[in-house]
Amino acid sequence: MPVVIGAAVLARRRTLVLAADVALLPAGWYAKNLVDYGFSGGSSWYGMGIWRAAMFRVPPQEATRLLRAGALDPVVTVPPLSPPSRYRALGYVGSSDVPSLSRAHLHNVNVSAISRGYARSARSVILDDPLHFLGNVAIGYGNFSAPSTEFDHLAPDRDRMGIHVTVWRVATGLRLVRILDRRLPIGTVGSLFTLLIPTGLVAHALLIRRRLARRDPRERVLREEAPLLAAVLLVLYTAVVSYALELGENVRFKFMIEPLLLTIWTVLVVRGWREWRSSGRDAPQGAHGKPHGWSRGSAGVPQPMARPLQAHGTPARVRP
Figure 1 (cartoon, rainbow, N blue to C red):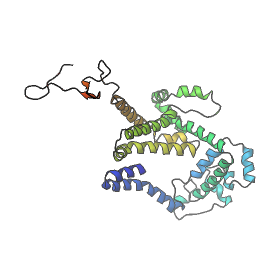
Figure 2 (cartoon, rainbow, N blue to C red; figure 1 turned 90 degrees about the horizontal axis):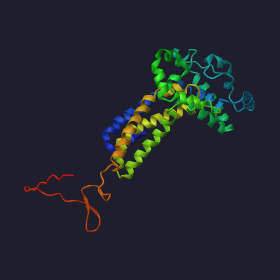
Figure 3 (cartoon, rainbow, N blue to C red; figure 1 turned 180 degrees about the vertical axis):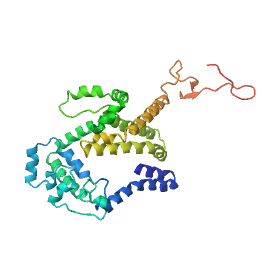
Figure 4 (tube, rainbow, N blue to C red; figure 1 turned 30 degrees about the vertical axis):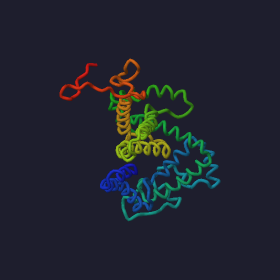
């Protein structure tokens, strides 16, 4: 959204109003959480997700040590994403006048406070061993890069789709990935998406840099690149949130950006091809390495050759 708004400011002020309206749409979700749960954020489950990401591969005895040292909140004695009733003994007994917020599910009014307890504990675990957490993030990225068809909860749908899933697995290099995974100590390289996500970001950055190097006006570059740049940032945001703040459902989150990522790459390939074609590499060269139709002037500077004129003053056609 900042990119869209910035482009609107530099382009037309009237567009700023529309861009601001679009940017305000997510604010409604934050306002809803503020009214229902008493906090302004995107997810009341955030703490439980990052706790799972932080605790992956942590030995049980290490978690016990941190708990006895007071570094962890008592909520961690209950598995994350458990029914709210499991936390009543820990003092989470809040109620709400809204019936849907008082039921025994993860939209219960107590969930946000429970989640904050997991988030505080995850912070302690991460600070205790940052390298361990970075390893988990790398594993999460591998999970995130796997085809969405490989999400465990989609097994019934995957079985019904048959040949479509088979073709998709071949297209994303899943068979090769599984061979590589058997040679890795931990984690997975996911699929072809492992490369498509970072290289797509780099490729778009290089295209923008090339335009700026050609002295294209910055306002024009930002205005014209805003849609693709917004799409790239959306992919980046979804990826980072999915593989760094969650572990176990990463593949499901990527389903929302797979079509967008493939669209971005289609645009980048077409634009890259056009940039290469217009770079002059394929311009016809004369006998001395100069484009046809050019000669050297008195100062040795290449100049276009004058074309003969017809009787009525218009350029005559010259045979190549």
